[in-house]
Image 1 (cartoon, rainbow, N blue to C red):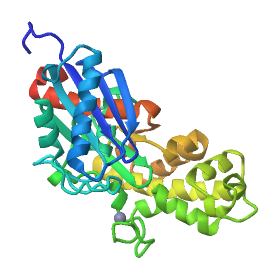
Image 2 (image 1 turned 90 degrees about the vertical axis):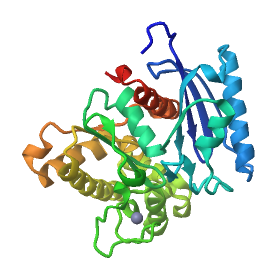
Image 3 (image 1 turned 180 degrees about the horizontal axis):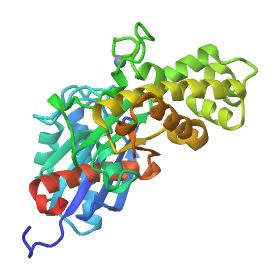
Image 4 (image 1 turned 90 degrees about the horizontal axis):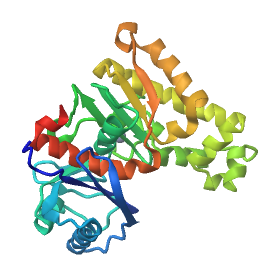
Length: 332
Ligand SMILES: [Zn+2]
């Protein structure tokens, strides 16, 4: 790196289905200024991207910066994209966004290099650089929100695979001829671990006497949040359901451990809410019992650490990867 160059600012954008978060940081990737707003897709993606560029300029003005002074921009995008062209394919939560060349459009508007990653990869980078996986060389990040997303850090770098398709652990089959999955296959991990599938199950099978139903105001309103709260309160149905959930998660982790032998597995969302006693402790026991000691020895299974600040860190972690890619000395 040019020793005369002053520190370059990084910009991270977390483009979510409901919220868009902007974070400005230094070369260490830590956020120092943040903005969030509702995503509000207009139906015209050109206009949506122009508004994003205007948001970025407004944030930079607060620091007296111009876009040309940014070292890199990283964007966490929901759902699939073409990594070669930087085109967002068709995120389910962004109406009107069908094959949007986000990298080209925003790059032209701002005049800076832009890196896209899907949200699970961006979150994996963020937990690796700034959260529960700091210092690891081999890390798997797994999040169970509406669906199941995963990101893989292998040998100290994000592993993307062909067409950035690696890490689709949510569609590993856990049951032969099992529950239908939104992807069209059956028995996928997501059909047991995804929030949407869990919610559908709860609304079908929750007994009226369970605290899940009481907390939700009727089982037809039950969500995973009610399940976890009722389990913490000792409700027998909720505890059994959460044990079933943890069991399926353990099956997926055993596959992951045999395939990748990670040092650390970072779990987000439902696992974090369920906590040590109801999730992490039984999960560690199951993984130890269903894998080989020399593969799982030293494996840490830990909750994600970034919580509410994940959105701010995700885009910046992607920007940091871009900057390190341009200037490898920074990542040493
Ligand atoms: Zn599937």
